[in-house]
Image (cartoon, rainbow, N blue to C red; front, side, top):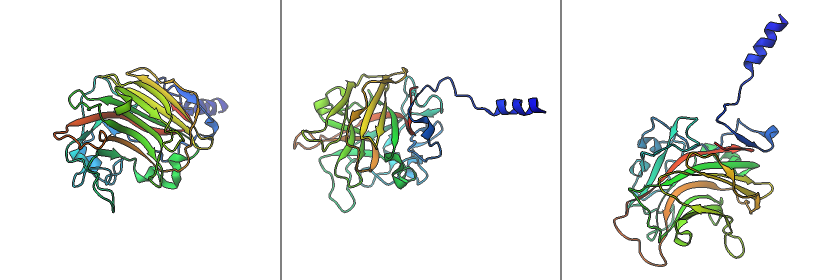
Length: 287
């Protein structure tokens, strides 16, 4: 009888899949029951799935006036999926911009000199500031699209954490403009002397750039992990001091800012590919 019970216990112990290599931090405090942001897209998803309340992203904002997200979202062919999509059999998607991508903030004026579309994780993952408390790691992969190239004379915002009062960014990921052909991870935009550069890497074509940003909201630090293509993440910075106060929401976006005071060009057909967007508590999934 005792042997039977022991055998049942052994069979009940779960195994950790070989593909999931973890950099563990405060594992005893892991909170798997939290509803954290998860923007991984099912393999059978269609663009119209981004229009409904059940979407993993907010369906109402941020997009050009009169548009719905199915006007903006396409599913590109990629040579290899994001390393964060392999285990879950999820797929990449692309945010596109056109001349119609002019956002009108509620109660505000049209942002005529900006073209933008932002995806914000669903409201379920923002309750009680769950995504901006404790130690949280945001994963995402990003790739350029040769068929919808960016005009890198412009500055593009591709990911950020925006404060709850909409006045600054605690984290800001950009390409183009001063960043040129690189992707730059910047720190708090209110930092004296300007947002510090935490990490920069070439935005090479035809493959994903993979990131994990581990944010300690108690210690006010950020640690950047990065890899290219199918390679597992590696730590590319230490835990760097960066003021993370202010809560707020995460944006995965294509925001094309103007060059000086010049008007935006016409005939815009640009895009950026995302994959494997998800957050976890206290750990960093490396592959």
